Amino acid sequence: MKEIVEKLVQAENEMAAEKGPFLLFAMFLREDAPDVWDLVVASPWIDADKSGSLRYISDKVGSVLDSKELVKLSRIVLIEPDSPALAAFQRAVHIEHGTAEIKDSDFSGLRIKHAYLITSRRDTTTKSSNSAPHTR
Image 1 (spheres, rainbow, N blue to C red):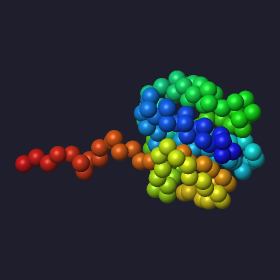
Image 2: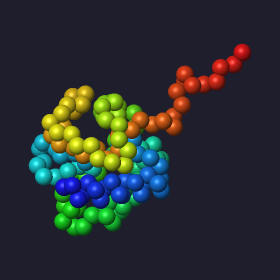
Image 3: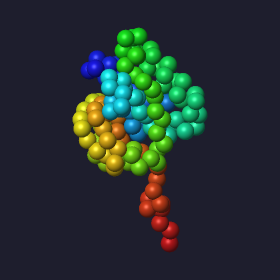
Image 4: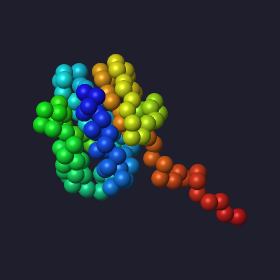
């Protein structure tokens, strides 16, 4: 599995350079599907064209993994940038273009058997209402 994760770090890095940063890029092992992983991703650029983004991510992942590695991935799951589950990961783990491994954990009621987080970061490009300039 480590080899697959290393290849996905490479693919995530390339996609972030081409399209923009990810808020989440991770592999999750579901309890109901042993030995099959979901690739879970979130990024503001995905929302502009979900089907095109899904195809782009799928093509990029397919270009770095061989056929034996690809069968370990069940699906690609697109997460909305405002998802509460995403916020829970971002609060718990901050990593970018690396690897953090999580086992037997719970994030806001979401049970995680096993996960590899490649990127988990907050969106720093969105300005909050508190950062608006003050006027006199």
